[in-house]
Amino acid sequence: PGGVVLASSSRVQYMISAMTDLKNNKRKKKDAALGEKTALYRKAIGRMKSATTSKGFGGRASSDSCVRITLQDILDIDTKGRWWKVGASWVGNQARAFHDDDDSENEQERSDSKADHKAKDKKEKKAEGKNNKLLVLASKQRMNTDTRRSIFCIVMGSADCDDAFEKLVRAGMLRSRAERETVRVLVECCGQEKSYNPFYAHLACRMCDFQPKCRFTFQLAYWDSFKQFEDMKARRAANLAKLLAHLIGVGHCLSLTVLKVIDISPEDMPEMGVIFLTILFTALFEMFDSPAEVISLFGGISRQFGSKSRGGEDDSAGAGDDGDALKENLSVFFLQYLKSSPKNIKKSKFRANFKAAVKACETDGLDSMIPMK
Image 1 (tube, rainbow, N blue to C red):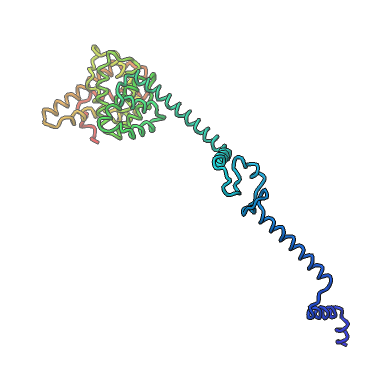
Image 2 (image 1 turned 90 degrees about the horizontal axis):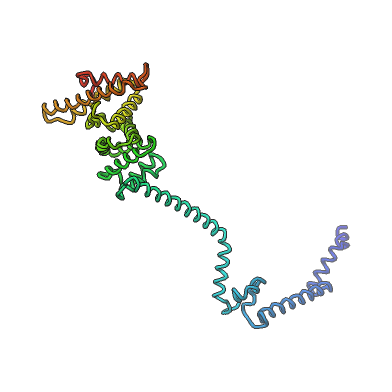
């Protein structure tokens, strides 16, 4: 029964016939028709390939005809030439075309760069105008040397105290000898202000901490200013007095011995000298929180004079006499001018410090009572 099923199967019959045809090298009609069509297609493709390889653009023979040419390439023949043909490119126009392409691609970058240049030029012109104004102002303030004009522009053109100090250090204006001009320019600028500006006091303290020689230079600058009391204006005297009060009371850069060159006498003292000392000690008395600080300040007068001379007993005695003379003159000034000050009211810090100062100036043997630091 299994053999009958196998023999009657249509699939088996088809396989047997196909194998027989393949053995006898016979092909069916359908396969023959398909093979003929395939052959025709191959011949057509072959003819197309042979035609494209044998003829180029315009009917001329060329080996470069297979290069892909776009419509834009044909339209750009006048500017870029026939780049697909050997020796037919137009170099000059091609370079110009490439430059035009670069300009179009970098147009945004150029516009941004142009805006940046405009902003930079505007900033430079503004800074140049500011420097020109400072130079004109420096000439009016009698800054008659290049060094002084440079220092003036740095001090007056800085944003704050730290900025001014850093610029002075970078410019080398706080080195030996150069610091003399810096100190004098600073004192002159402070005196010319319409109202006192603590900027100069803070900058002066920074300078003294960085360059100790500035301390003595400030003392010399004040001694020169004391000689000008006859011609000095009240505004300048007030500004310099407040600056000195800061240097003495806050920065501890100077001491009261800087006043030793002033002839403190109620009869012959110039009016600006009285204004200067009044504002100076008023600022100092309001600056200290306790009378002990005032006593220590005035006690330093004798110590400062004593340290000036170490040669012998006679020199030390003379230095001590100078310190006592200064304290005695200050005591007279206090009683003559500051006692009637409107700030001298009961239970005020000014009154407590005023009494301590008067007592410190009139007490004998004060130096032995104050411990040395």
